[in-house]
Length: 275
Image (tube, rainbow, N blue to C red; front, side, top):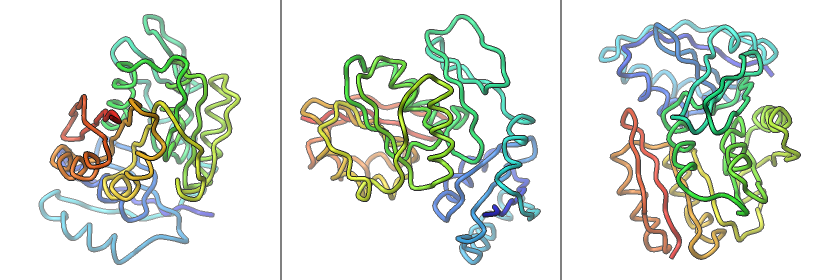
């Protein structure tokens, strides 16, 4: 299956907004460039009308121009090798690709070859989730990573000492990529394919990680709560700071109370505890 590629030039302050809204209409891969963003969507499920409407909505304010093309999945890794730089989350973890050298001075290291999957630590949501994971004890815990993407959060849980980690995603490409990354990081884990309702993970879990988007989180919140052990932790990201109250309105009646929050570039991340 080919992917449609759109090279978008835009004002820098609109990049995060466009990524968030484009992810809602079928785009599952984003690469930030000096001029804007390159975005990708499966050609067989691309929603042309929704895309055109979204671009028109921001075109004037964000000074958008768009160049369209096609790219085969097999070419994607070459693009990452050209553009993907390592990142550091404080001294907690160094995230690099296999073609980058290791670096000393960090408690942990994660090797990610992202290909078409989302989640390299560069995006504010993934960065915050990794950082927040470092604040909660994972040792000996059962962890579920919902919508795992590259598998980066599942790998972090493993490095932090989780006794059991499960992960799944709705995209078969993410599953293939996640399994490759698990192997790169010495994990015997295999990622599942499907939504949380299709995969039907068997709780209870001590920790549930969900870095997706607001609509999916709201829809699946009750499922997350049902899978959590008493006093278990739910990590959430993939939404803006102004969306926090909407999420808490759904989470609080389920016995989920916010104990920690963070913000980066107007993207939010939360830790909720099940009472």
